[in-house]
Length: 392
Image (cartoon, rainbow, N blue to C red; front, side, top):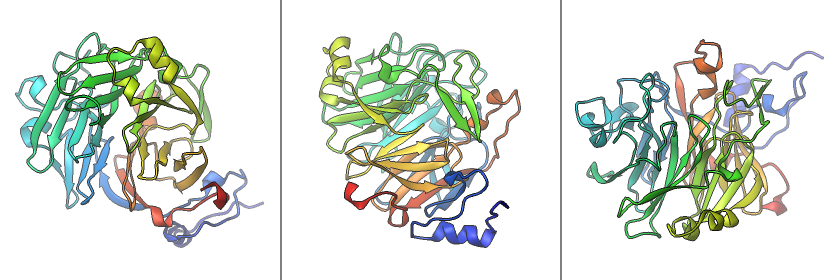
């Protein structure tokens, strides 16, 4: 059988189609070879590569550019205005400057809006080529996006912060604590992942579930990337690995969902328990729920219907998990190259294609990234719906 070749015209048609369709498969019989869903390129970035994304209801767009893989001199947090990166909240704080580490952004990774549309970021404090994480570098910072003013800045310090910590993503719960509570995933640059809980009023913080399966990479895990199996080896990683990574919060803030990067499981825990600094590790562990498979995901997001959107680097796709556990395909496209940060609005899904699996460290020193990183938009009204309607 001859291989099916998609012409540029047909490819464009398939991208724009609002219908779910079936098409012949190539010799491999792999459905993931066929694009699905409508995808729009909102923006394209040259180096440095992007990671987190946040979008306001009035469509203001914020993107993070961490420095832990590349110690760049550009903005680590930016608002995208007319296709240009504008350092946020200002040049002095987002660009390298002479400000003390505690007063500027070092390496912003995950970003999220709270229920009042304040922007919160986790600064992992890590810069490529610089050993460790200096005091004051790692922190949770909140901004009023209208005034560009800092509304809170809480350093993450030892023993909550380890020198191999990789503070990855965060969500803000305004229903617990006087000024709210931050939940942070520490996927770890080493082998010590956990969740981090921070009281935004007092700065009280602690590291939890560090020895629980829900935060740990799965031993013996095999990822299938670019058609090749890659075995999880923390000492010699051949793809991005780590523990607790993706994170999202239910609309009523009663449940936190999270997942290790090197795993296909999804977990949850009640925030009433997680935010309680008196709760023991035993109590926390008893309240963790294993919600089953969700694919090999990096970022997570949730919509008003409590459906969780998961990135999937193995299949260059975005999936959606319904409250009953049923999953459907939102989009699949080769341009969704290691989907990382993700957020969802009523109209659609916004996702960053980070290409993290192409870093030189995973390919014998050869950087395989295309320095044209994409910010993608997937209209939900055109997303293909896969599966029986009675499940929805």
